[in-house]
Length: 544
Ligand SMILES: O=P(O)(O)OC[C@H]1O[C@H](O)[C@H](O)[C@@H](O)[C@@H]1O
Image 1 (cartoon, protein in one colour):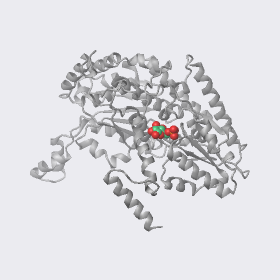
Image 2: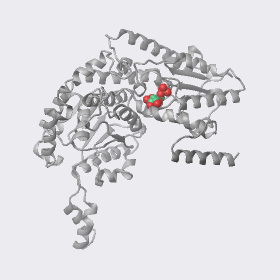
Image 3: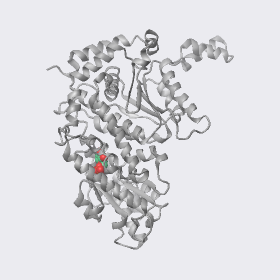
Image 4: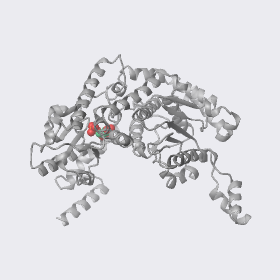
């Protein structure tokens, strides 16, 4: 069998790139008046305009052929049927069962339904004030202690759904082992009104356990009650016995399963802070929005399939245009944590260098994901997007209506978003730049000298994702869209998107270095590490 890069479709795409290199995106619009309409798709309340890309009909046709030839439709079917796609950990990949009917997965649906009921009962107890802290007071603050997938998803969604939050309950997120994170959070809180959610699929993550122990000491110390954990701590984990050993009551433990990956888990009880903050009804709307995107993904042909198209565009730029990064720029204050969330989703899933059989791949895989909300980024890194030497495809994300129709803020925001994608595409010619300098009063020689600095090459690609208003349903669909995009790319690259062995070595080494810092063990490391350990020891010795 041909390797991926030797396959006829790959070779044809390489030729396509050579042809399109000489055509500007703006020129493609002139050639085809139907272009915007043709390259716009909608599903589950989300519209994707992918017309501002280096593509034409033959490109789209070849890219969808690539998806077919790599078995994307069969892989989608395999995921929804519960096949063990996570081959290195021998696990199913069933985050879709957390939010859809999945009639053929009755076992998973039954446990999911019972977990949702347990969440609903708990949310009701907290909201109604039936659940009280150890001193009899109501809970007013929830602190989620978790990291990675047990933090980024619920944190991102809670911020995104701020307009849906109940005013009587505040949510806080502590993830970093840096004591500043926990201390800065707790200093504003009253232990009598505080509930901790310890979120850890494995219940072995060092940062989470360290933070949870310190939170427990703060609670018990302040309430002068060694038994306060029972009313102030709940856990979400698949390691129920370990959580019990920590002191959390078995009744107060919400389940997780090995068929849900950490970075795909916000739909499970890991989403408890979302349900507490926004109510169970809004949590279920989030699930329903994701389920609508799941249905579109599983039922739609590749050329009309939003996640597949987004995945193929990513492959097109990573593998054929040499793009090493991808910017995600939400023009939405509430999506302030969205790019960080997608960073874990994409980079932990597709940041791999071997295929499913362990052979080193001969092409690039997942890009560096980065970005920030607009318009803030415009006054920071957009300079590089417009004139830098890197090729960075962009996703712009924007809503038609704001939760805050304040004067003309939203029309300004929307106009800025459209201006950026247009500026990236059109650029500014040398002549335009020179003429602008002459209009400013510079003579022709000076204007010519300055013009290269103002000139912008343009022809830089972007997609625009549009929806009516940021609601739980829309957000659910948007997240599911990116999940599936990442999955499709992994299928095309033949990598396992569901393990993360690359994070393990750092953890192992930390277990060796940490005791050396306190002198509890020797320091047999490399010269640099030994010297840095010695500096740490010297500092702590002299400051004793
Ligand atoms: O939920 P936990 O088991 O505590 O895991 C938290 C996180 O840490 C790990 O190191 C992985 O890199 C992440 O994928 C995971 O989400």
